[in-house]
Length: 285
Ligand code: NDP
Image (cartoon, rainbow, N blue to C red; front, side, top):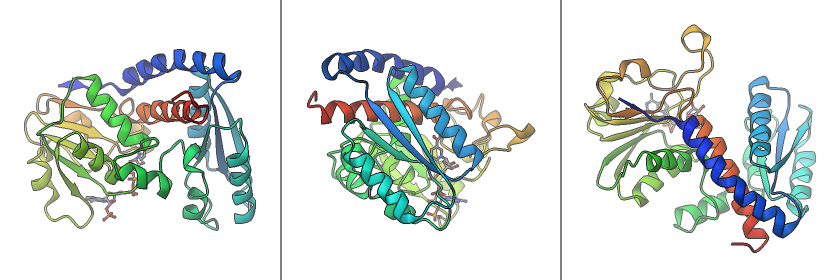
């Protein structure tokens, strides 16, 4: 089984970004900048945000974490986003979800200007994306496509199944696979006999958010399996995915591990998106 090593591919993506950042600095006199907003004190979210900052700095980009207290009001958060939209030195804005329950995530997300939407997830960004004219692509599905391309896996003509239909992963994933000429089926929690559907697929992208839900018996021989799932507290307290990866060797053709598969690609794509947004706003693209 070929292990689709997202960590390695992400490294390559970062290397390819570094010279673009150097050119940007030369032309514009500052580095592309990502502002990340986090509200509250969720430990895992703070780790994700810190990793994003470290990743930015690894390619010469700059990043600011705006850490707001858990009792931040909707108006205060909205005002923060509006100020970042207006700040010419900010190229990308990302709001770390989940937000505390008293805040309206949809309202917050859609305040981010599509010119600075590094995640590519506002309704305006998604509209352009689904119309085939993306400003930037949603990070996780775009990262999956980058891994497949890196390993010379063409999806053209393949029967692909995407498990999950969220706006963040499932729906845009199905869109990118369709654009790349796969024949795509989208499954969800109401799909009957999921295993019978996934077993027909040449490529399965699993984004159900259910730890270790699918295993060898759910895939056909020589399938390609991409596991988007991310769960803390798998076997031995480790991070695990939606797929029982250890069952796949000797059965499927290729698969992404967790950790080290899709996760690093999501961050690498976030950097790509931020750089692209910076270049576009500066008129360099
Ligand atoms: P959501 O909870 O928003 O969506 C999950 C989707 O899976 C829904 O469409 C749901 O169906 C479907 N689903 C749930 N249970 C089943 C089931 N038993 N059978 C079939 N379909 C099912 O999750 P996200 O899309 O945001 O994330 C999915 C996973 O990916 C999570 O584990 C998340 O942590 C991870 N993730 C990882 C990232 C990374 O960088 N690696 C980035 C983003 C997410 P329905 O619509 O009917 O409810």
